[in-house]
Amino acid sequence: MFCSACGTKSNDDNAQFCTGCGVAFPAGAVQPAAASPAIADTLPDGIKGWSWGAFLLNWIWAVGNRTWIGLLALIPYVGLGVAIWLGIKGREMAWKNGQWQSVDHFNRVQKKWSQWGVGILLASCVIGLLIGVGAAMYESRSHSAGDDQLNAEMAAILAGTNDSQASSMTTAALPAARTESGSLDSNADALPMPLDTVAGTLSKVELQNGQNGVALNEQLLFSGDDAHWQKPVRVFKLPDQREYILMASSGGRGNSCETLFYFLIADRSGVRATPEFGTCSPQGTYTQDGGKVTLTLPMMGGHSTIVFDGNTVREDGKVVDLVDSNDPSQ
Picture 1 (cartoon, one colour):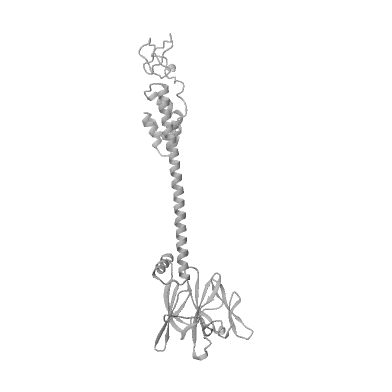
Picture 2 (cartoon, one colour):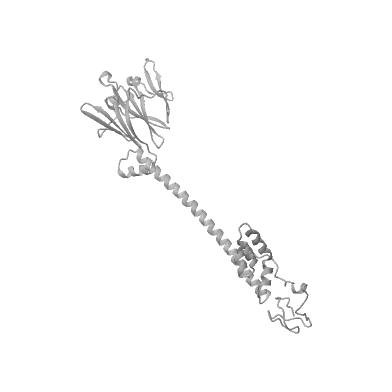
């Protein structure tokens, strides 16, 4: 007797109940165990259908349901096609390969496979989303922290901070800081004008008294008696896009003092000048270390050391204050 409920073949043609699932056979419905192939291969109702467990778990589902052909899902490029095929035909193959107590038992097991497959898929999506959001937040926070550190360190530079902490911060923030040294001679090293700077074009303009003045973008900067002799000697470029322009002048001292110097600090907003300084010698040496420039100028009996940190000029350790006698605009 062939059971249409679970597919079990009974050895007893006169059996009243299925030995596999216990379903009662209708009275008088005697079906030989050796039924025709068409009858033997007939699937009970509720077997066919799409299997999410077979599709999503594919080769794992295939091992659990002894459907070995499903292991083809492990083959690269072929796996997706096999997974789809398992989703369509998996339930039928599992029914034929398994030992099931009943159709209800079969459906309960396959439902659990589907629940596991969908659950694992959703968990993977959630974990992937959390990882993506976490990575984006970490990258954003890293950039923000880096920007905050850079802003703080640049503020320390602009404020002329000299303590060791600011120095180490500056070194970390400005890995491309320029370090160079050499000699200078205001008589031989004068730069051509007009001169392009980060603030614009520095040039000479003729004044009404026949002398020259210094202008930036054709706007007059200095028009005093000393402006006629002022000229750029060297440009020190900084990693933060600023420039220190070393300017030479006669200092208004006539023949008694050949040359004095001052700096123009140039950025995209314009320029500002430091007080004039020097020993009246046009020659000397320079060293640039990031945002600090040190000049060594000869003098009677030795030499003088001038250090400019972007904010303050110190001559032999003493701050040079701006007064009328050293004002480049006078």
